[in-house]
Image (cartoon, rainbow, N blue to C red; front, side):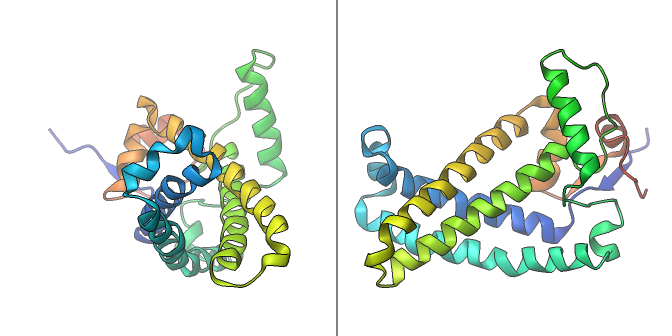
Length: 217
């Protein structure tokens, strides 16, 4: 029996960025939640080894790991805006357009049984594009406000920075929870495995779940 045909869905740069996000966001959440609400998440202090470890995780590990991801994200964005084959050869356009708004509306209405029309899904699910933009905005808000509070004397702006930090946190947390819930859906296991390993999915899976994806076999 011939081996099932595979196609690259996530290139090496995308997989590295994703792993950096996983490590950085996880470290940030574990070390930030106890401060966000100690009554609910105070147990995490013990899990991460106390206040000193929390500071190391939140100030340094999170900042360094996500900081490494920044130039890689900028690189892919430059490739995207310049229409480079590196990013777009498989139709990997992750900036939302008018068509994505319409498709997202149809999908949302379909969840409630209001609309039966099902749009053709391309490389990215249209709602995934909005999630990508949202999590990047959230991380920018977290990064700017967090770095200023952690490493600079900005006491006069602390209230504003805390609000900015909380907004960024809530935005990232909601998207991450939704992303994890979708990732553990059995229908998405193949693409999850691809992201975490060699980046490849079967052509059968791709044609079933992303029929509009321009597959280069």
